Length: 172
Image 1: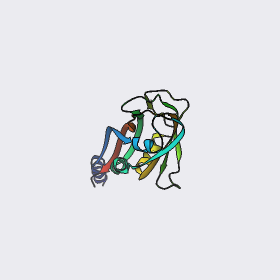
Image 2: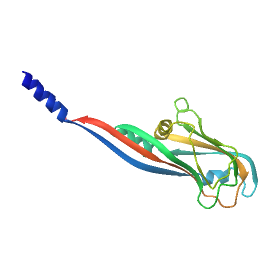
Image 3: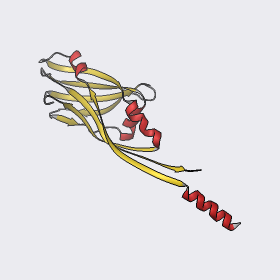
């Protein structure tokens, strides 16, 4: 009887496997058109507010289907592909999910004053919380800024990071 139990335990232990996969990612969202709709080129902007609504869930929700997710957004950039961002004086960025009860509008970045060519955003929320927002469905990213808008702007926000997915599976 003891041998049968030992054989069964051996089979149980050897018919189980674990895996871990790690990869990096970047997802870029263009926001230029919304900025120009809300302002006038070459004019001093006392304060402008605009938003971009996107569904990034196809890119981010698939990750969780393969196991436990560990995610770190290590590079979130706001950049102007054809110039600098030195025309921006103050900047605030918030995000809101499709369900306001579950995913209310939260502040993810704020800087006053602002003077850089590109901005590496230091999140005011955790990477896991941002991942939940990005994977839940449609999101709205709100921008509030002031400055002197140049004639040419190609404005993007880019979400980059590393993700690790791990799980343990049994063959039985």
